[in-house]
Amino acid sequence: MNKYEQKLSQWLYGSPRHIRALEVAGTLALPQWSLAAGFVRNLAWDRLHGLDISPFADIDLIYFDPMDLSTESERRYEASLKALAPEYPWSVKNQARMHQRNGDKPYSSTLDAMGYWPEKETAIGVSLSADDEAATEDGTVNLHGGILVFTSAFGFESLFELRLTHNPKRARSLFEHRVASKR
Image (cartoon, rainbow, N blue to C red):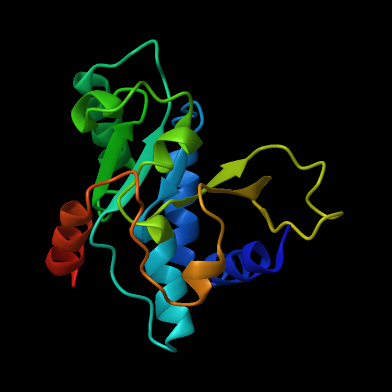
């Protein structure tokens, strides 16, 4: 676990709302799942700016299931999450189908899909794994029988440098629109 993952683990562990969201998302046991985008980015930037943790605008649960590309499944998963934690604004997307919407070649994994997101700092996700073997040896935080597992398409440095970086795989205009719309 690198220094950035250790700091993110500390911040996540210090936020009961984030931990609850991870635990609830983990109940679905989706393949290659992560809570990503603003879930990690906003927490990091709030902490780095010395601010209180912002309310969730949405919680992006991403996963990769090439055997079921239906949007109906995503809606069912969202309904399940809302039944377990109705206070959270869940958004569930199967990254195995997002290439169709984005006009890309098919993605091979959640991590590959994240590599096409418009800004690099959102391409960081976190999940809980039930595997406890490495929990004490590498500094990973152990939470209720699970460990935090980070996924990042571009690393963590620019997130911690408070940068917002355009991904050249996406049109600059899309990046600029997202910057303006999300302020």
